[in-house]
Length: 227
Image 1 (tube, rainbow, N blue to C red):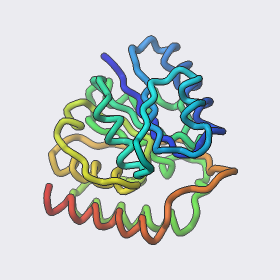
Image 2 (image 1 turned 90 degrees about the vertical axis):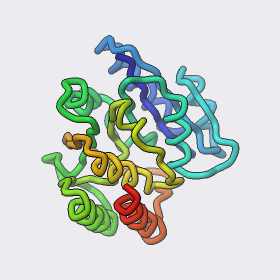
Image 3 (image 1 turned 45 degrees about the vertical axis):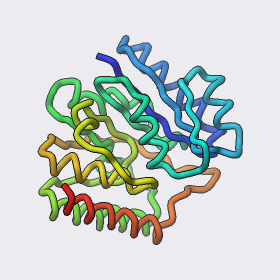
């Protein structure tokens, strides 16, 4: 089984090297055959150079387009039987990858989402963001019947069959909702695993609660209509 780990990056020079190294260490301990693919969304810092220095397969978009475009580029390059996505800002723990992978590897799920809201630790999420996630979760449950606590998590893994079943169109942060909706609508098994979450202490998130929130809601409704 080949594992493709896709890491989209935009101006995360302080964390991307650390994420790559920790991911490599986890993979070495497991012995799983893998490839680490970093897709740079035209960062203007040293993210691209850091990713190359730490030995990942690196691809760069020709212009800054958004997380959705970066992930789609990574999906196109991935050769794995199982595809993993993880954020590059240090909010996710690569050491928890095996727990997130387990349901797919054991044949119990087709898409696994790492949920910060299932963790027993308190979640230091911004109140507006947390409210938005709860709202999106409700819409997804009403439209698909799938009960999810963290529909916006970028920490997830899926089978090659799930990826082949859809052609995501989203260019931004709404790609997670679009793909979740299509996966559920296509009858694949979706589950969650608890993961840790660390709020970034430097830099700035690119998520606009209003603009991106509207795009996420639109992607949920659109995917429910188109299937």
